[in-house]
Image (cartoon, rainbow, N blue to C red):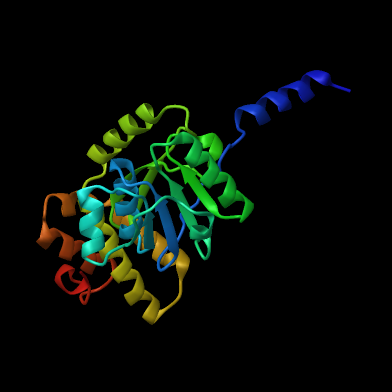
Length: 234
């Protein structure tokens, strides 16, 4: 038996071990709960709302931002301390109080009920962690250091934000519209992939960034046909 090969495989497996399973989660119309009423909780609530969740906040005191959201009917607010029954019917919970023991208790109770739970600043108590995210419409770039260095994740996110600008919002709107139009005519994934790759290779992103509408229309006509125009697609 070649032990050296076995040892090498063990090292490789250890190096490439993934602590977390990366996934994009659809929480539209899902009941989500945030415990805590401070700035951290407010940021978590904002993101949940942006993703279409039905959000309940449980906290005796809340920031003005959270109170305003409640007044507008954007969230459900329970102005009291957390109770175990608050988890009934909840899909996902984020514990963001300023009490670490309470956060751990909430996490333990959530785990008993097989709920997804994130505890702010405590990966060990969480069933999932939240990455740093570059949001460009349908383009989401997530950066995670598996909880080892939020500072590095933030730095990398800023670098990616500079590289991937708002032109990618328009790009994906345009590509989505073209794809739907193409699918009405034929379902040829290989050909569609080739056309989109060619569009990118010929500088479509750069044209959008520089707002070269005439050049965009010429490229679309060349690849897809005369009926493909920027103004009618987005």
